[in-house]
Amino acid sequence: METNVYRSYMLYNYKQIPHISKITDDEREAIEVVGRVLPFKTNNYVINELINWDSIPNDPIFNLNFPCREMLLRRHYNLMKKTMDKNASQEEIARVIKRIRSELNPNPSGQEYNIPAVDGIELKGVQHKYRETVLFFPSQGQTCHAYCTFCFRWPQFSDMHNFKFAMKENELLVKYLKTHPKVTDVLFTGGDPMTMTAKIMASYIEPLLAEGMEHIQTIRIGTKSLAYWPYRFLTDNDADDVIQLFEKVIKSGKNLAIMAHFNHPVELSTEAVKQAIIRIRSTGAQIRTQSPLLKNINDNPDVWAEMWRKQVNLNCIPYYMFVERDTGAKQFFEVPLERCWNIFRKAYQSVSGVCRTVRGPSMSANPGKIQILGVTEVAGEKVFVLRFLQGRDPDWAARPFFAKYDAKATWLNQLKPAFGEEKFFYEDELNHIKKK
Image (tube, rainbow, N blue to C red; front, side, top):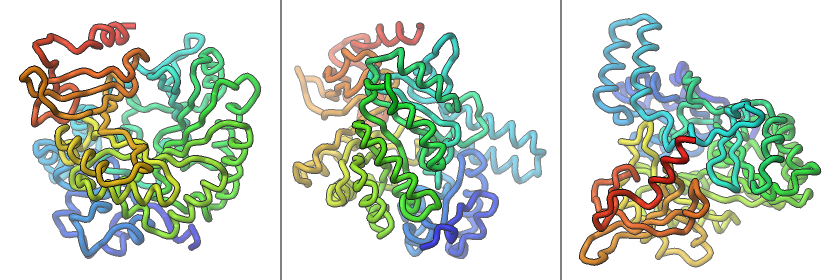
């Protein structure tokens, strides 16, 4: 199919959607109101190929793309609607939007502590939280083919400049990496790096293949494009150039891992995504898959088991089940930690060993990636069993620890240490790291 058939529908022209008659007046109002606060963008691959318009508003892909009333707290929704209804000035509307956004925890998990510097220059487009892995936010890739309503990086797509991570200065990234020989992985993230042209992407990636960068062993590209825009690898004008760039990375001797975001089996169902996966895999690149566990989308073990099986059958590697982060529309999507673990466990039990490469449920929290291993009773106390998969201090990795059982807890900061302890083992060192 010609790619120029597909285009993005932005908030201001969503009424062009062919299925607009399927959207009720209340739902249209929600798109207008919530879409002022949380960014909205979709495209007609998603609209025509993935959404079941006979099932809205309960269709999972519809909820992944279209804002609904419950994605804002009631007081935030009412404030935004009241401001719009009274024909307030653009300045007043902007102030209300800024106020609401500031109350949605726009910078979760201590990302401000991840920003490094080189020669006294703060690298606003780099995060270095874990010793072996550096994240890079190329400024040209800070958008997506469509925006996920659950996305924890929603400030990247809003006019919240103090919370954006982005930079063009590739030479500063290279300089930083050369002074950190323990870094083995560079993750291009966003936004979506696959919204960049192949030429711009090559300008960032090719320096990592050069002499002096031998310690960089893996290049990762975080992307939702396989789910929302598989034509990026098939028929876009520079799709062949993208594939050739992937081949160049592999021929250099480095590992290339496409970190693909799939939230529901439907996203793996089209012929376009299947062909795109085949084409990427033909270069020698890996495709690793990940998703948060989302209420109203995939909070069912059968959905996860089906998704992992489909991914493995398409030669992808299930990698992470995340816990939805404490930001943005979290109240619509968050699931209690105990239920997250039960969903993971039941899905894990129902698939074969080749699917069990997946890790989770994992919270990407301030101290690191923390996996929920289960709920059990120790010395007469009901507890969560947790462990670090990654930590700000590498010594924390693989260390188990315990938290008091809390049936309502949905995030790490709601948990308290078990067995009468005043603090978790990592807290003193974490506070020291934050003060540096």
